[in-house]
Length: 152
Image (cartoon, rainbow, N blue to C red; front, side):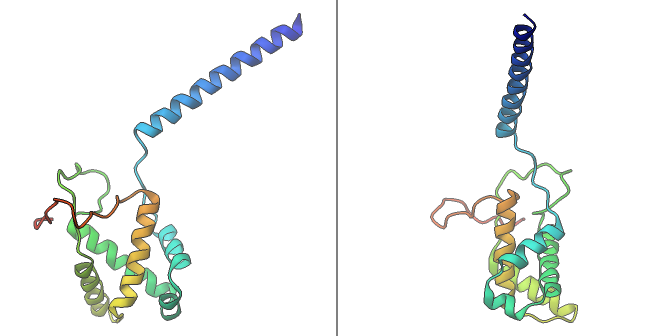
């Protein structure tokens, strides 16, 4: 008799646990948590995934400087924020050439010069990281009807 009661109690506990797990999984699939950008994690990820040509010409400090300039550009353009704003009603579109030019100029102002190919390699890897953590969506197709927004 005690075994039957024990099995029933364990069964009830397991059923409650399973229900809670499924409920939480359903909630997360409907409303996933916001992506959180960790600069140190981003730096490590970019350094680990940077292509060999760029990695052979850049130090970790160079990569950090380029990432910092890119994030500064994102903040100026209203792409990144601390979560206190309402999301934009139109997609934010950034031209890679504009971003690369800003980073090359900004790093040049601080005394470090990089060629656009180095910046582009780091920038592409950084964007891959942001996609990986879910901070940005997929690139917009060239065939789409979306028009670039000038007032970003």
